[in-house]
Image 1 (cartoon, each protein chain N blue to C red):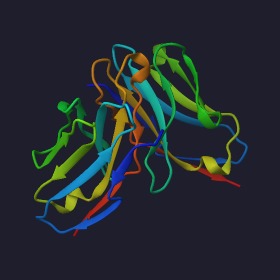
Image 2 (cartoon, rainbow over the protein chains, first blue to last red):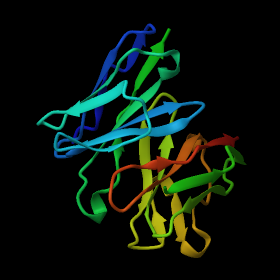
Image 3 (spheres, each protein chain N blue to C red):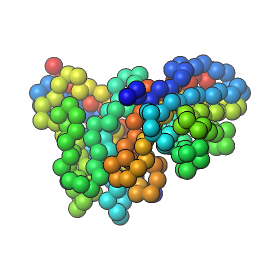
Length: 115
Length: 113
């Protein structure tokens, strides 16, 4: 099976712009989670989508949003970019079924730089 | 909220030496626990997971971890370090009822020749 793919891999934006990142989960996986990784804050949970519905949300401002499509692909959007949004954004997919389906499989990430 | 604490942001070992990376969790109910490894400019790769089936969990690349409820610990070990083990390692906890995975701050492992 192909792994989790994320596009683009690298992105440079300026303050005030908005950005959309894309994630394609492993085939058959219905849960997609997003994480932000920065040197200062480490790995932080943004949100999880399952069957096109946001199931959980981390402690991020409303500028961070996401959605999931019927084929389980997911996008996250950050509006009005700030310098502090520079980070590696990781997407993870999970089958989310039973005790054996709880691990998450991560994509390579999108490196966002805000100038 | 559940959380994990990784003791030691940097660990350095010699090639062939024992690797021990420490992780303690805070939870009243045995959760799901994971160890992930991250190589530079890459995503996270699952090393192993604890799902209450067995307290000693064997993972990939010769790593294993032991769940100790009395100590609320889930330390990662490998008997003999290899140069290719140099990376950042993350311990993570996930509650029973959702996929909100909480990561530790990470431990950077350096392997000296």
